[in-house]
Image (cartoon, rainbow, N blue to C red; front, side):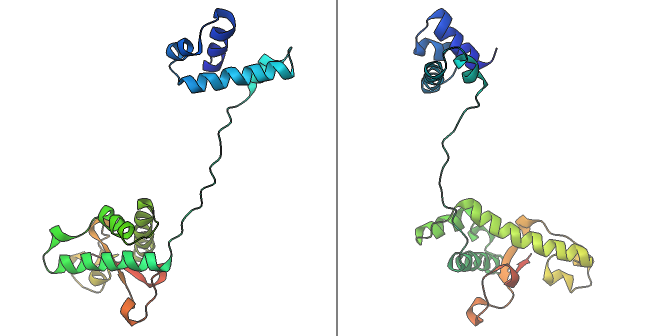
Length: 186
């Protein structure tokens, strides 16, 4: 028996309270109340077919009108800055001082940017995917530093966690902060 049918059976036939029905069915009392009110409204509209209409209707959920925040140039520039800082720290042997994606997100929030953690992750993944696809097509490493070499790593495809984003043309020299001007370095 469907939960909605079970709720209406307990309400109509057994005459149980909404609280007892919610305990037996294992649903929130507000959900049970919504189903019962929907049933009562459908009975008022059409007494003969109201029950069938109520059971056949799909649940309606309120839609959210949330505006999606876009990755703007200042946000991308700030993410790039932190990723470059991480690359510098790795080169100088300060691996433990590198910021994780969560830390970068927290720094962005502290600076007043309205951005989600998933947007930071998506930005880094988008750059990685673009660079890795191009490297596989050429048959070389997705890290430009190893791709030009002749050692064993010149065809290695690095994982995303082993790479950091960097500007092709430096931001300080007028380079834009977008995917076209970004490269992932190992």
